[in-house]
Amino acid sequence: MKFFVDTAEIDAIAELNDLGMVDGVTTNPSLILKSGRDILEVTKEICDLVDGPVSAEVVALESDAMIAEGRKLAEIADNITIKLPLTWDGLKACKVLSGDGHMINVTLCFSANQALLAAKAGATFISPFIGRLDDIHIDGLELIEDIRTIYDNYGFETEILAASIRSVNHVQDCARIGADVITAPPDVIKKLASHPLTNAGLEQFMKDWAKTGQKIL
Figure (tube, rainbow, N blue to C red):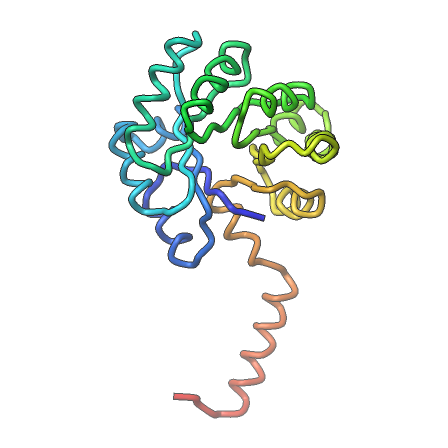
């Protein structure tokens, strides 16, 4: 499973990228706001830093304007993925921009029917939002399962990019179900390395080592 980092913070991306934990990056208007940076400037910096797809989101709501913004964003770098909302206008823009040869990430997906439409419109990635479904007491992981089944039934090449990841359990469950990609905040990805038994075991090892009175260096 590929790991995309859901942030526009350069330092956080660089730390994970140095460890080989970054297969791509996703951004959105909220993350750009949080970074306090100009969208074109920070997106170009991210694209220069990582080799994989970097999602940059349009802000227009009408298809012709989405297409124009998408083409502008695609000029930033070869690894730009144009991020479009899962609306009828977004699907229209997806069809045109994917036809131009651009990678497309269709976002804000909350149903398997929406995911089916995005695949037929030529999306490179579909982004179902697990956490936001959980927030309204709907099992977001069931949506991942449904999309996986439908895509496999018909051989769609659109990759399932599980988004709105809130916990390490979300990551594990998405991997088990067969999501192609997860995009998560840096802190969630780093928490994958943590386990209380690891910490307890290391603490015991260090106590025992101190008792030996030895040094390695």
